Image (cartoon, rainbow, N blue to C red; front, side, top):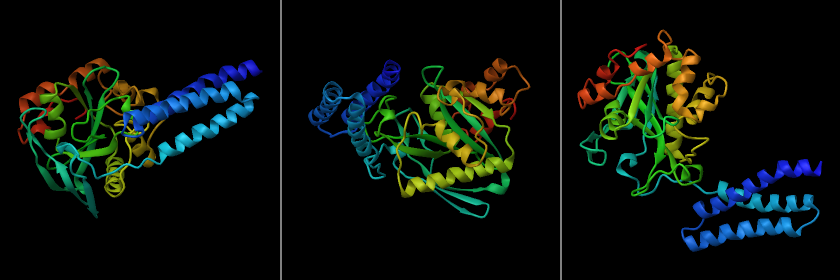
Length: 326
């Protein structure tokens, strides 16, 4: 029994030690010397506990206290809306809702000359929810086919869609890191934008592979989802929150929203390995299923249409031309 308990607890304890050291190093003091000393000190103290304290139950209890102190410190690190932000995330969007009229303040509609050269354009736009027609999903691949960036975009009877991309809010000169994304390094940010900004940036200037899938959801559900997004956007304007690469990323946060409106569906590993989330949506009948999945996916690629449309005011209509289920 003791051997079995040791086999179960050892990986857990080692994982806690490794995570605690990483948290102290990454999220600890700005001074690398102090942060390193904290991390080494935690590892040393943890190993000493298990070498010196007996019986093992007491060692585990002492370690739990030490780890609890590190975890409590980490959880108390506060995010901020007041930093030297990159221009693309410099404004904190907020939304007002008056009956069916939804007014977006701080909608991003940059005019790009390259990925890093652009004219900053921030707009105020009004959308009539009584004229909402549905919601679409974009998947954008920049590297591995296993991982994609997800963007939700709500369509209306008239006017451009309203695209919302859940991202990290990077400071000037800061680069995204998947490893750092698991710690408290990036604030959570909702880019509320025109598709000519948030989609064209990826297709035309970053060279990413982008797919568009109209979702098979009732209008009322699409509306409730958007209203739930709005509530979160306004909450972040009042009180910032941390991005987390596992629990609050571009896809798992969407699931939080669908769960909030009662339509999350069962958990699936593809919420994390989200490069295959379109495959999951196909299996669940959430996207068009009249074609074999491979053909649907091929026809849902919007890169060439986006490059051809470029800054055309009809960009959104042009990239949807011929999309299955559109």
